[in-house]
Image (tube, rainbow, N blue to C red; front, side):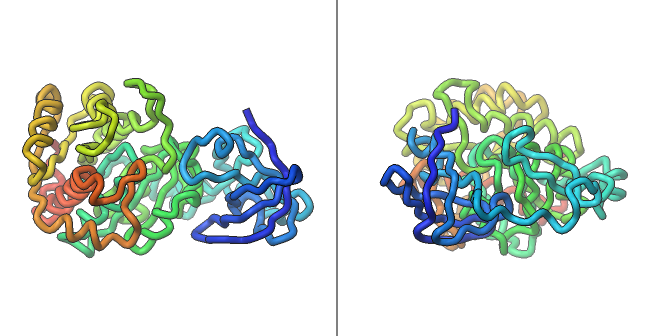
Length: 369
């Protein structure tokens, strides 16, 4: 449950879109690094008294190593410009029935300027949608898309398997110029657009943001238990089903690694095999990059062999992708490993992006696999 701490802000540190990092002197004499979301709690200043949820930090869980600011009790932020009882400001509640539930304007609710568009939208018209089980794949996928087609408009759909606030991700803050927009779906929030479901979010990517390609992945800080089914990224299989149900073209970014110390994640991670082999009921294109180490390539082929009856397993050339990855505007890191330490992981994600771009260049996105 919640492990509460109270203290006083001593220093403001890094800031990025939607988040402020700060140091807090605790009432018990200790110190903590904390993170505040100004849209929820207001803008902290040195000398402010803060209430913290320190549970994940104290237990060593999650990404980033922060206590989270729950309130500035002596200096509460003002109400939004429109009264909270007015549905003109939106009535989409996320992180529902938690103490910090935000009330937002959903992209498809009646008060939204996009309501009529989405009320009429039924189809993605072959939109290529890349699904990935880790947030760390996002910049690599973008590198692969833009390696061959810098002009393509890419939308990111933030699902709620990891961090719920989009603001937590420094990666996402650094990719703003690479994306036409972020849509937070389900219980996630803080994107450029808010959607109640992945389905409405996908339609918004196509018909509101006019994206050429969409990427679906959870936020940072995924949940894993070391079991086949107890991993939040397994939901990428459901994303494949949603894309197919709406007439899109699902493209699976595989989690491939020769560096992960855990045997269940070497070659093709068991999470990819479960998501695409057991959860995804619709057909997807699963992308494998050329140029893998021969031993790793053999492991990958063996792992994917049982999936070939359900999905199309495609080889994509990797020439030029290493250079594209090295041009990423944000650091590449997965499970603490950078590009050179886990090259195959990032190369596989970039290859999925390249495949989507080449489908568009060939004009074949309407041909669903």
